[in-house]
Length: 399
Image (tube, rainbow, N blue to C red; front, side, top):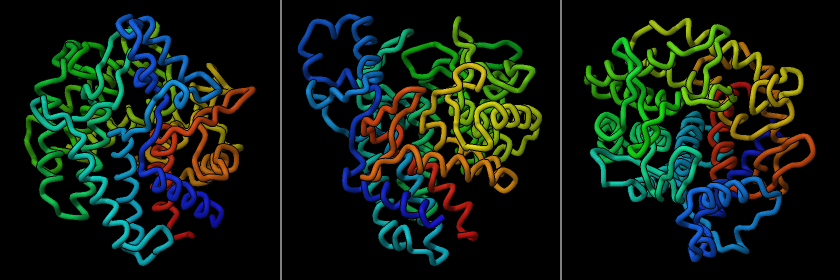
């Protein structure tokens, strides 16, 4: 455990020195070189450019003039992590900072999130600091997504609980209007629906829809607005209806999107749990138990702690630190830490022993033959900061 504390503080120092700003796997379209060419108007070229940057073992960002920037989702992850560290410091443990130091960092990050919000929609919302081209649609820079918004809202509520700054509270609550009014809804019959990923698409991506459900459930916890509870139940029900017999969840209802991966499954499980807990409805208990058992048994090597990106039958050699970090949050939020402590210790130790640099930052991905060591600030470092902060809270009394 002492090595883990050293590992975490090394990561913390790295992120603070970088001022929580950096590159991202998907920020290729921020290249000033690319923006100066007519290729920027061609969707295939945009997609190829992004994927080339993401997959390259050599970081081309300095050469092609991609600036380091703040990413709102990454800042939300850091803010959640600092709130967790503050809760540790409240117990008298100053190994990760004093209460005063951590409080100052919480306020700084929360204020940054207020500045980064997109104010062009019905309620507070957040997007990414880069244009993003997928196979299905194009999202211009700062287009709000339900995914980024969900993580920021959770962080602002946590910051509010510590600081009692009502602006954090009112901003987070207003995000319900964005989810209800600006996201598209995909009808799934029987009074059920899914939320779109952004206001600019109409795709039913299951984890994204559930993050909308999660956010409405969290806001319902504070406001008791029954409309939020109803919409959360209808959208949770739509995804649970698509759950496979073995407990797994498809990624979306698009052709070729039936695959299953580790961290998106974690998103789904947490979101359903938020609905159950905050809306006081146990209707989906069986769904979450089946889903959890499938996730735990198929995405991890229990002996080594190796975290598979896809389930072990699809790609047994690919690991991504996002999966490690999200798993620590998921075990915590599902109250599954104690009964899975050996597995969780193995997951954490493997990541710190095999995927962390001497400078403190974590590497992006590892496959059978190589490790991608590009220094990304959000993915995986904000994620590892976030995930390890939950691990440290759960382990605190045993340190």
